[in-house]
Amino acid sequence: MNESLIKSIAACPACKGSLEVGPQLTCAACGLEFPVVDGIPILINEANSIFSIEDFKQGRPTTYGSPLKGWKRLVSKFIPSINLNLGSDQNYKDFFERLRAKRSRPRVLILGGAIEGQGLDLEPIADQFEFVETDVSFGPRTGIICDAHDLPFNSESFDGVIAQAVLEHVLDPFRCVEEMERVLVSNGLVYAETPFMQQVHMGRFDFLRFSHLGHRRLFRRFTEVSSGAIGGPAMTLAWTYSYFLRGLFVNKTLQKAAFAFGNLTSFYLKYLDPLLKERPGTYDSASAYYFMGTKDGKTLDDRELIMNYKGTF
Image (cartoon, rainbow, N blue to C red; front, side, top):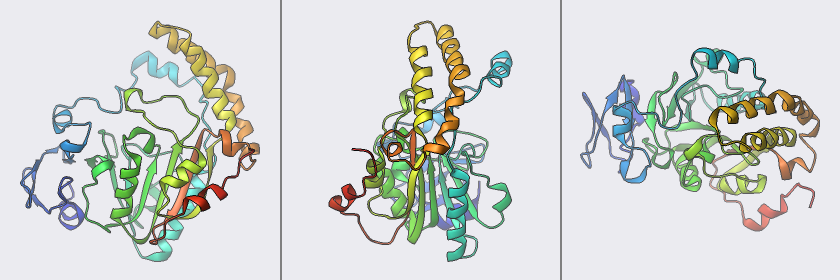
């Protein structure tokens, strides 16, 4: 546990009071207590979360299931992916360059940071930024367990916030984005990637999807830097085909076999997406969209929002 971080910016997720450090963390204002498990603080507001502190104390699986083992893991390595990321690496490069231009060693909050996201390579820039990696699941990079609905940080504590493939898995994405805004400094930068045309991929922890304009409205209190497709319509087609095949069967083994067959026979489709990325139809049918924006006190009017439609209708 990073005690200096806890003392400087961490707050009670329920009342935002300061936390006293000991064998566990205790809110000086409301008295709530939060355990530390294997050096990781569990800062969950149980009154407003689908997760309980006991889940993490007992090591119960939350959003991530058990990793594949043995022959299943070996076989999975030979099944081609139907996913193709259309530029996260460049988007992150832009994101970090913009933060570096504002101050030295910016502090960045990563939501859903149990594992490193696609296109996000933190190792080469680790000494240039202070990364706070959080999740609602233990993972190799989890530094703090917290729920994005109630971020356990003081207001204006971060220069940047990243939420890659997170907002489809929360019950109230508008509240989560409000929390991101709260913890960002003035002119802070947010970056998010969220699915549109994707099937369920995290079981009971998968709730919402957003069109390009829907995603933009979610971040209406930010001024747009850039946005667009991050997974194209060809990827959408491959996902639909593979999920269709899996849906034909009730038996779990046959479902997995059908899905693997779907991947084997449709993975090549994704390579069409770079050709389609900027076409109008992609704004109606992309697999996922990204948004990068700054917190500058301005709110996008809904009339202006709909004028930004770039699709084919």
